Length: 174
Image (cartoon, rainbow, N blue to C red; front, side, top):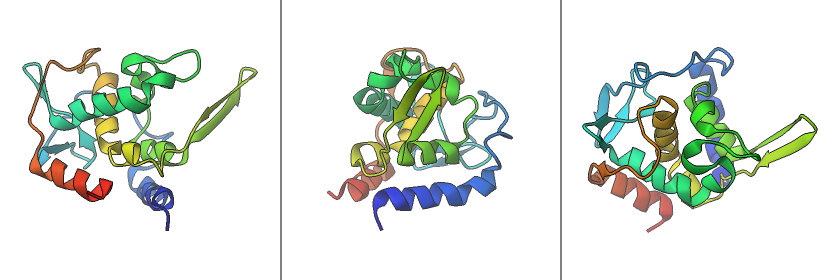
């Protein structure tokens, strides 16, 4: 089974748990509040990955998400998730997209036609430089959507937790 299919199956399996993306209420800093720490990865009350930003210091996953976003996503979606003439502002989109929907879109891609133009987001389910860091991307964009992460490179970040190192090594095959 290809990695893209495995990620897509996981995302689709999680959809019923999160409800329809149409029913997803707008995200907020209050909903995204970290209530659990799993070795440096923070989770909200619903068990979704989230950010933890205190005194100008971001958690490792937010920082890693910033780096990954600017490696693979900003070309189409603009600096810091602000959008472009070709692709939407993800800092706005994440206000209304739940975690499973985000995973599904990144893994499978998306094709939008409207207003006389066609936009195609490629599938990244086979790209280890993206799928190994989908939680990081989600956390960073969620922080941008909730207005708690400023534009630009975060000036301070937590150290990379051992759990993050282990997950990266396992996913990247190293």
